[in-house]
Amino acid sequence: MAPPSSYYIILFLLLSLLSHTAFTFSNSITLPLSPLLTKPHSSDSDPFHSVKLAASSSLTRAHHLKHRNNNSPSVATTPAYPKSYGGYSIDLNLGTPPQTSPFVLDTGSSLVWFPCTSHYLCSHCNFPNIDPTKIPTFIPKNSSTAKLLGCRNPKCGYLFGPDVESRCPQCKKPGSQNCSLTCPSYIIQYGLGATAGFLLLDNLNFPGKTVPQFLVGCSILSIRQPSGIAGFGRGQESLPSQMNLKRFSYCLVSHRFDDTPQSSDLVLQISSTGDTKTNGLSYTPFRSNPSNNSVFREYYYVTLRKLIVGGVDVKIPYKFLEPGSDGNGGTIVDSGSTFTFMERPVYNLVAQEFLRQLGKKYSREENVEAQSGLSPCFNISGVKTISFPEFTFQFKGGAKMSQPLLNYFSFVGDAEVLCFTVVSDGGAGQPKTAGPAIILGNYQQQNFYVEYDLENERFGFGPRNCKRKA
Ligand SMILES: *[C@@H]1O[C@H](CO)[C@@H](O)[C@H](O)[C@H]1NC(C)=O
Ligand SMILES: *[C@@H]1O[C@H](CO)[C@@H](O)[C@H](O)[C@H]1NC(C)=O
Ligand SMILES: *[C@@H]1O[C@H](CO)[C@@H](O)[C@H](O)[C@H]1NC(C)=O
Ligand SMILES: *[C@@H]1O[C@H](CO)[C@@H](O)[C@H](O)[C@H]1NC(C)=O
Image 1 (cartoon, helix red, strand yellow):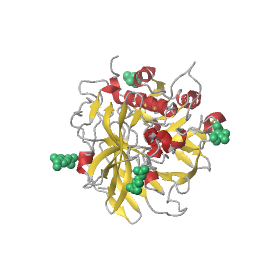
Image 2: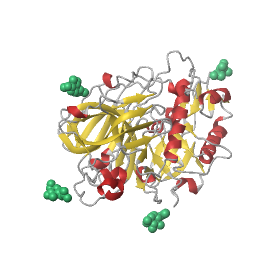
Image 3: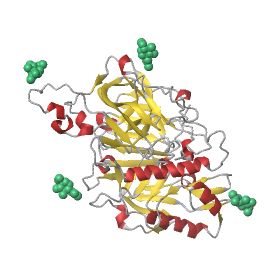
Image 4: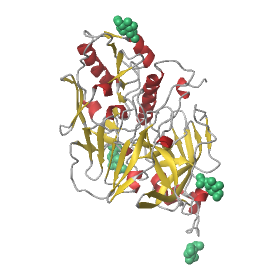
């Protein structure tokens, strides 16, 4: 099978360009957060390339989040990052002395893992600008504090379940109470790739704070996955859970495909601030998924009440807005998806409303739609002042997220066509709804300050210019 065109992308880690400073205050840690940019393959002159790629990677990501395999406890799953390149990256320092590694920030998964050992092998990782033999890796031997995780260690249970005898069958034998076996190795699968390795405990270092015995995945083999991932989901193994963070927040700088690189901040709140709300933010409660599917428990669910297009309340059937007892439906917030995903019936209602309000004013560009994978698209050539309807997500409790225009209509191709940056899949004959019906992607979080208030189980957001002051 020929590799998909998205295979030829540059995962352009900007880390070397950015300062590696982290700032600590008494009760919080601030880290620089950088967009992962890609450039089309040098021989690729397709003007739709990056948008097409973002649209298809958003769909792959949505498919993955919706259909994650929950059958095997030894297999955790997380998305395909080389495809969903529209993510954001942080640097973390592990070990003694500290070794710095880049990680993609992911609120849709929980394990923190990175390329590891001098034998690290990245297969199908020949991305332009990435030499698979030169991917920076963590060297456990060089860290005086690195330890293999033992099978009986309760942290082994984060991935392999609380029952010691089932995760360490060799320890079952009589007289083996002192069983010194290591925790089983993990395999993380995703759409087009995978990563595998073993679990380590080591110090996670921040200026002024060290987290001892932090659980981290040391991957020795990856397929199509050149960078590590920092899982910020709700699982016990995630960074926020292991550090017992009270809140974390970020402000996503624009990663529009034409922008110059910038970074912003990721703030980790270590000590309690009670129920103080951050100035300028609106809040909506997190909600839990009523099903017993542990995969869905890793996600950050919020309750979307309304989608408003130019003052018109689009009537979304209830079953999409709330997760049912089977776990399907509802809305999650995801830092690892680029464009927001909506289940086909929801997407159709929203897109039709935009068409109804814009179709007479601007000519539709179906050719661009076919080439970019986004729809609807409108030609605004020669128009003096463009006037598009507002687009607002309204959540439980009344919090309204009114999107800046360029968060939901993006210039595609030659800057005279604007396309709606929400994606959907399927159509007639698609399998029935599975997993979250709406995934709020990072494109729709650009230039918002976003706070995950874990202590008070609520999600806060407010418009902000996210560029860091130099
Ligand atoms: C690990 O230690 C070896 C030997 O001391 C050294 O050559 C190598 O550069 C170190 N690697 C890292 C990533 O620190
Ligand atoms: C287990 O280890 C402890 C202390 O290291 C020792 O006292 C005990 O005899 C060991 N038990 C077995 C069954 O080996
Ligand atoms: C979830 O599991 C509990 C206990 O195992 C059970 O009582 C409950 O009915 C389950 N809920 C669903 C929605 O399956
Ligand atoms: C947009 O409309 C202008 C004027 O009608 C036309 O010249 C141009 O080719 C259109 N753009 C695209 C991408 O079709």
